[in-house]
Image (cartoon, rainbow, N blue to C red):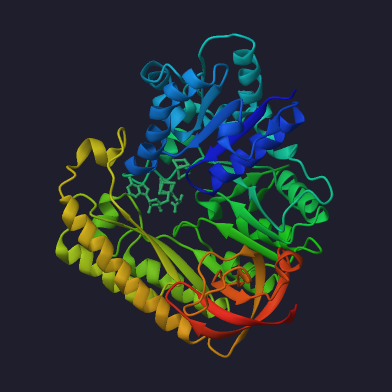
Length: 463
Ligand code: SAH
Ligand code: SF4
Ligand code: F3S
């Protein structure tokens, strides 16, 4: 009987994609996928190191592992992803119940390592040595993306496609450059090919992924391909309805990219452009090399070129040295931009980063918490206001599935579906018994009510 594998994924979209590719590879290698971890012969944790909280969630799972292995002899446990690269052999020492530790740059080896352990081998370590010195991607790793399973009918309506790996920006607080390596752009033809195959298999929305996706720059035969050109090439693929990209970096976001967003019909009017802080002093300490004024000028340029540009942001509160005044400047920036939504994080010192080495984590936990809540409240007020303007409008929605957040006063959640507009607004609507048939489709919904997080509407007709 084929061994069953269960993968638990933590962290960003990059990790979600990695898990999907690994799952595909394992299926091709004769494994089966288990819906529940309890039913699995192999459990894989694909981990994130970006904040201590993310690591703590994984550590809780690892804490339970010894007991689970005692109850189920033969169970194989693998920890993969960013935590694996960051802590490597230490994890194997600290958690004897772990069989495999495998970094994100070695995932093409995972299937082989699992087989080895199942055949009786002891603990296996696969992390990338001298990661930052690597200027090329191992062929096997690129092959994971290139050989992704796109059998007809096997694909969902939405898919992530990687355009680059790594990050060279070295924000002082961030662990990503040290666990994901240098920025390396994938060949244009690999990306275009992958999207084409996904679209042929039924995908209608593609999200291009990179830690700083607009830094995409591929040196092909004698010339460089920019991100704007990539958007135009991918956007030209027939039957691709929606093209998105995350995450953008405020430096190197050229006017060409905004033009491509405005001119290529498939490209969505959505931009996730983290600012991280509204204080120039803190931005400098974060090693984010732009001023608040430059950031606002970029947003203004985008709004002038891309109709109805919808913006999302990331902010860190409680960065070392952040005063009340610095925080007020962040609040001012959030108000000035008018984001659709913001992801707000409390600063978490990461071992090995410049900030953790040089700056004291001097903002007390309760101050971080208060600033976090205050900023959330400000954003909520803005989102509420922006959402209200949708009442009476009909929007195009790509249906994702059953909704978890029902509209107030509607007890029956079973018939509610959720999806997103082109601007990434979340929409919930009554599907009146058509839930299965509409999932993965584009529909038109008339907005009748709104909250800070959601637009609520009524189905008009399939688009
Ligand atoms: N490459 C992306 C996302 C990186 S991680 C980008 O640069 O936008 C996602 C978010 O986590 C970051 O935007 C940042 O807001 C937050 N983050 C990263 N490191 C952090 C840390 N040490 N503490 C708190 N938040 C952090
Ligand atoms: Fe981290 Fe900065 Fe790179 Fe984003 S741009 S991954 S925050 S170093
Ligand atoms: Fe986390 Fe790694 Fe993504 S640290 S945010 S999973 S790149």
